[in-house]
Amino acid sequence: MDTTFHLRSLLAAVAALGAASAATAADVDGIAATVGNATILKSDVMGEMHRFGMPQSDDYTAMLNRLIERKLIMNAAAGSKMTMQEWVVDNRIREITESGFNGDRNQLIAALAREKLPYTEFRQRIKDDLIVGAMRWNAVDKFVTASPADMREEYNTHPERYMSAAKTSVSVILLAPGDKDKRELVDEALKEDPFPDVARRYSADPHARAGGVWKDVVPADVFRPEICEAVAKLKKGEVSGWIDMQGWSFLVRKDEDTAAKPLAFADAYEAIEANVKAAKSAELYNRWLDILKSETYIKVY
Image (cartoon, rainbow, N blue to C red):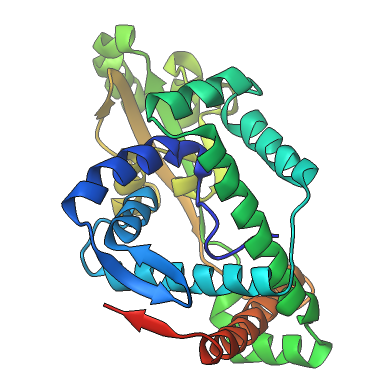
């Protein structure tokens, strides 16, 4: 029951929620909008911007619109007598506790207490999120399908979306912080011996036994940005200079580049289906919101 408004990471944002709510209420007090009988304060908008990592002033209108949508859906839920059983809320909080607080409810309570966020307020937010998700499911998501014809059209119209990732094979020699003085030994050895042999002899890299080879990887998935930047500048067969990173010394050779290639329809099936459903869901969602807006008085200040 995901919603576009669900906390991107409720676990990491607990502190931001409490701090932003307290800090901004005094700074930007005032009404931002009314949705039916509900009021959205400017402090609500600023607090949500802070919680979702949207610091730019240009983000204000986008966040206000999201809050308006949420109010519309909550009003619709009240009108349809939508309720959420308490055990469902308890299960969701249990999931949050497991994934974000090592299953220790005391850690969650302590985090809320540090930010002066009452548990009842936190729990109500979780309940509201579930209600919004359930409303969206009933009004939108359960009607969304991806027909074979739609999927084939998507695949043919947007081939750039269905490509295998470009990959690179590299070889690495890694020296531990205490072995920095071995750089000269490695440099001299590389003048006489193949890179894989030198890697086996000196490298602390986990792939040292295989000659330091990292085959067909997406650099950003396995290496720090400093290494990725160095790899991107290398031509096939070239070796970087030594790269210092927190005391460790890296030497990287680019072995091969594998360009992105079009995926067969069968291989891209899940991604195609997801994209078709996402597009249809967005279309239906916007139609639903238009109906809710037409039935509700909204004023933005």
